[in-house]
Length: 259
Picture 1 (cartoon, helix red, strand yellow):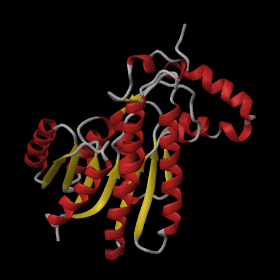
Picture 2 (picture 1 turned 180 degrees about the vertical axis):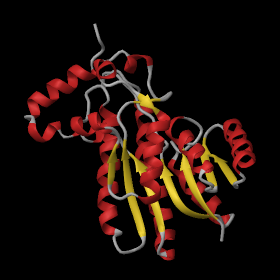
Picture 3 (picture 1 turned 90 degrees about the vertical axis):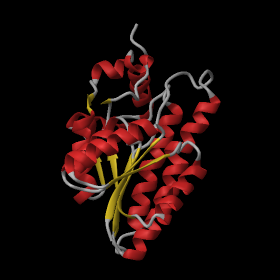
């Protein structure tokens, strides 16, 4: 049976770059995003350039029922997903009292609920085959939740905790769960206000292709979690040696917009 790597959020950023690198390595792909035009173009380009098979589904995964629909569509077409990349997600910046409740609920649905759905359903199939790998994309903010990114930080903290615990549960089943934890990445994710923060000045975004390279390696042969970049690894460990009240002052300052 022909095997595929399924990537959500595949039309831009880390997901797009991972698709390019995996296609070059001759892996068949299933691409998922909301933009059917971008997906169709990627299918044509990658299949003709690298001689691989590329399938795609346009799904808005901020609706968890469409994550279930995606799984059912993949299964009905008898596509065998050997690897899953739960990359789709978005964030927001601003005072919690002023940010959009509707947008935050969509964020929780996409970053948490749909990721949970796809992980569970595909992991069950992989466990039956005694083989499979799932990589969930978390964040540096999984370790150091920032003010003004309150809901986003919470969703990514969930992703890390969820991934690490089910990875332990699935030991010995043939299913490997890993977690990619990038810092700031140069993608359309960042709003204009995010780009004005002290954190963005202090820790410059890295190219998405560099994070994707680390992601591909982790997906194909890694274990556990991968914090991308030494600076981010160092920052992620600061809470271990810094009192909470001092750490929160530091984080609030970093998350604030430069005067």
